[in-house]
Image (tube, rainbow over all chains, first blue to last red; front, side, top):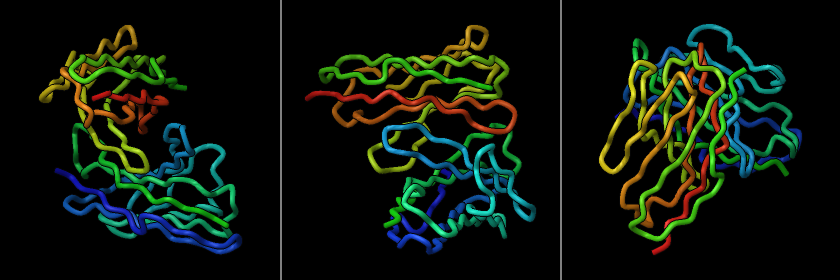
Length: 117
Length: 110
């Protein structure tokens, strides 16, 4: 099956620093990847849609200068949380579907737990 | 804006009982619907995908139905096991993105 990986699986950083999260599609190419965040006991909220070779599309209310997304290749997208603050602490999950897929079935990574102290 | 609702929010059953999880959505113009499983602190595992033209999908003990006109989907899990304990999420795809429900947290008691 299609596998999506994320690195790191958890990270602790100090307030004001930046942290980068990687999302990789291991056995398929993905023109489009998605970034979600999930707060405890809540569902997933889409943050942005990442397209290979072009600028990401951010959902309403998501600060694009704070959450920098780079989709540099067909298998890698990165999310950088800049000048992180405690309220950015959350569970970040990426997903993707194979390029050319007609079903658009999305596969999700294992998530990255970010804690900002 | 698509709104997805899952009822009940939590469910506790004895082992062996069948599970019925409900999902409703407000906009019937969907491309597909996916059911996912999420274990605590983990990512999502895709269980079943139903295209908008389909009425149901089956995989092992799992069966999902879709009634697009009424905006409803139901996930059935037969003969539940303690290993089925998890949160089950329903998500519908509209024009470009998945909209998620809040999930149903299932506990199967041994």
